Every structure is written in C-alpha cells, then in structure tokens.
Length: 408
Image (cartoon, rainbow, N blue to C red; front, side, top):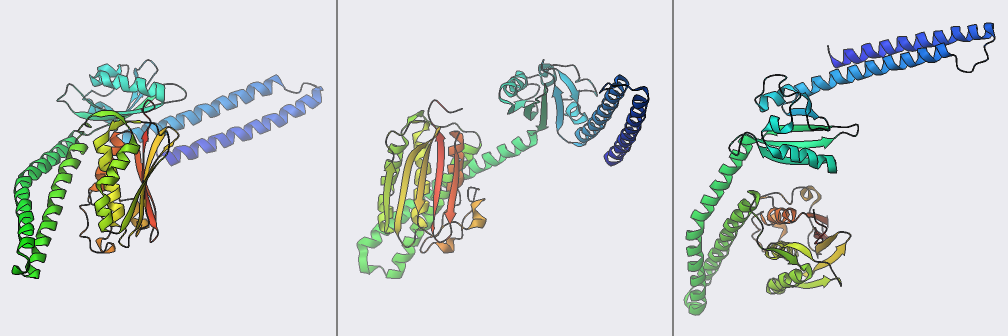
C-alpha cells in the first residue's frame, strides 16, 4: 500500500476514534449528572481514554514502521539496526546482499559474525561513546570487498549502521594514483634537463649581451619561465597524489607556528620586494605549540603568501599573523589585492580550479593545485582552512590547527 494511502487511513481512523470518545464523554457526563456523581474523573472514562490513546499510538507506530521499512528497502545502501549488545535486530535487503547473506540470516548475529571483521564492532563502540562514527573496513579479509560504515546512536537505545560498497571506487582511485605517479616520474627527468638547459641559455644570453638580439633573449626567458611552471605542476601533481592516497606526514613533532610563519615569509621576501609588496609577520605572545609536520605546514604558509603577493598587482601590504583562538592556533594571511569573486569562494580549494588569470597583471597563473594541496595538509593535521574576501578590497586566507594535547 502507498505511504500516502496508509497515512490517510490512519487519519480517518483517528478521527473516528476522537468522535467516538467525544460522544462517550457526553453520555457519561449526562449519566454523572443524573446519578449525582461528584467525582472529577470517572473511572470508566479514564479507562476508555487510555484505551483510545493506546490504539492511536499502536497505529502511529505501525504506520511509521511500515514507511521506514519500505524506505530502507528502497535504498542501495545496507541498513542495520543494532541493539545495545551489538546484535543485529533489523536488516534491509541490500544489507544481506552486500554481506552475501541469505534473506533474514543477519538478524540475531553479532557485528563480528556479520562483517567478519572486528573493526565494525569497534566502530559501533565508538558511536556508543561519541554519538556517531565513520570508518572503512575490508570484509572477509584484506582482499575482500571494502565497505564504508556510518554508525549513529539512537537516544532510545541501540544504533543505526548504514554501509555501502566502495570497492570499485577505491580501485579506480588506485588506478588514477598510479597513472599520475608514473606520468609524473616519466616527465620529471626530461623536464629537469630542459629546465637546466633553459637556465644555461639564459645565463649565456646575459653574458653575450647585444650579440644576441633582444627578441631572442626574451624568448629564452619565456622558455625558462614556462619550463619552471611545468616542473612545478609535475611536483605538485606528485605531492597531491601522495596526499590523496593516504600518504603519511613526515616528522610529526611539536611545532611553533610563529617560527614557521617567520621562516616562510623570509623565503618569499625577495619575490615580494620585486612585486613592490611589503611583507610583515605578526605573532602573538605565548602562542601554544601544535603537533604536526613543520615542513608541510610551512608549505601551506608559503602557498598562501605566494598567492597573496601574486594577487596584489599594485603592491601594498601582505601580512601573516599567528594567534591562539580557543583550542586552536589560527594562522592568517591577509592582502589588499584583487580579492576572490563570490562565485569562486566555494570552489577555490578544489583541484585545478583557478581564478581568472587575466586578473593578475604580468602573471602566467598557477597550476590550480596549491590551495588543494594546502587543504589536504591542513585536514591531515585535524584542522580546517577557509577564506574571507571582498572583491577589489582583499582576502584573508586562514587555517586553524588544534593545540598540542587537545587534538583528536
């Protein structure tokens, strides 16, 4: 039966019950007046009202359960309801199919029996303590299907677990990662050679002076610049590929983000001077340390500073600040450049997304990977990164990293 038909039938039934109860109350009131019953609450009426409410609750639960079961069966994801003893109480059809069980076989099984993996039970126990949990497990051994599980505790008791098969997705991601790795390695050697030759040509052209026409020197300079961009793109592709494939951070230690910000700014001081940009660093006193990879965090700050300088074509100040904010340390890079258009703010941390290069005078534009890499690095540190910007006024790119000892 369609859910709308069920709902209509329930409403009609409830309406009939309400009318009957009203008529019963009227009749009992007349009887009470005729028999001069002084009681404020007639026992018969109280029992009838309780029976009416019980019938109403039963009908509502039946309608809700019927709709919920129909909805669960319509999903492609597996859906399980687990009691507090971590045993399966209910399971939809896709859950049986994904776990290769016959219909109804899951009910009564423990999570270990259903998934053949102890991590599913650990995930449910995490949800018991924290309210929800998400994880990925391999079923039937490390080479079995891969499932993403999402568990959520129910206030009245038990848990919902929703899971889906991501085996094919992980296979395609692995193919993509291997392709990028192989391509990048194949390109790196010839590009390094071309880059060295272009650099040598540039130096020899400077030494030769007027013996080489100005147009020729300009073309040699452009070859060097464009080769540099290609080398940068290959390096960033490799970097992003390693990060997205779950590559671990380097040396994880206590990090002073104030020192990292100062060092990063000095690396870009010459570039900023050439662009007519005044670079400054502001670090609050007694900023707590964070736990992370100092080189990776420095890479993020360099990326943000480089963009800030690049998108300040008319010069002006660019500042990097470090301060504590609650349980995090916030690092912000502010500029007074062209700003980020509103339409670009939601996509600016995506791979290969670039703001219109025509907005930057004299720049060939970047690879569109720097901010995506920065986002991944910050997320690996358990933090978040965001942008605030007004077009034509400037931008502030910020990221927050949990204070050491408060992460997790």
